[in-house]
Length: 169
Image 1 (tube, rainbow, N blue to C red):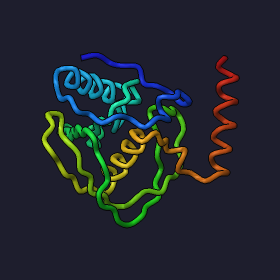
Image 2 (cartoon, helix red, strand yellow):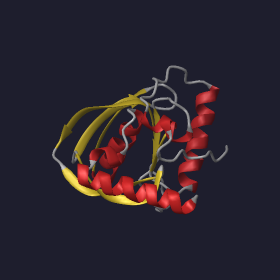
Image 3 (cartoon, helix red, strand yellow):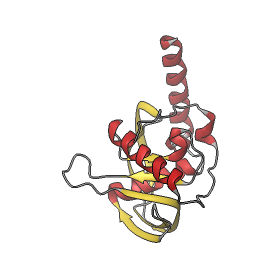
Image 4 (cartoon, rainbow, N blue to C red):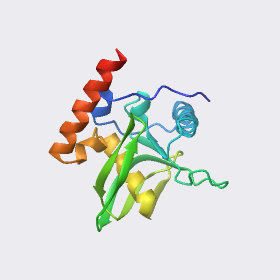
């Protein structure tokens, strides 16, 4: 296992839709193990494959946040098949460090996909898990959480990003 570099905004790979996983062999298993290690080291509650530079429809999620028992979820080719309600909550992203903002998401979702071995799975989720699933599936579709905020907030984000980039250069 290895910790991989997490791609940061505005890296182009974060804006591109990812490709379906169709080979569940050794290369995928290594990628999954690396992503899990990278997510825990960051630390984060979710990570999409394109965040580590691999344009595949794969995500790892663990919303146990420091609990002794983990709730690791590995999903290949996930898609939301049902949703209800709406909630606004504070959200951040490993690819946009040190920035959080309120984002509206569905309150409950049902997601289908495949586990790490290609077996079909279906999950119903609410709360933090529902939010994490939607956030990571957005990544796989080339959507960042800042794409889901209002125009004025987005302008503030872009100005702040440019200012911080100029200071660090």
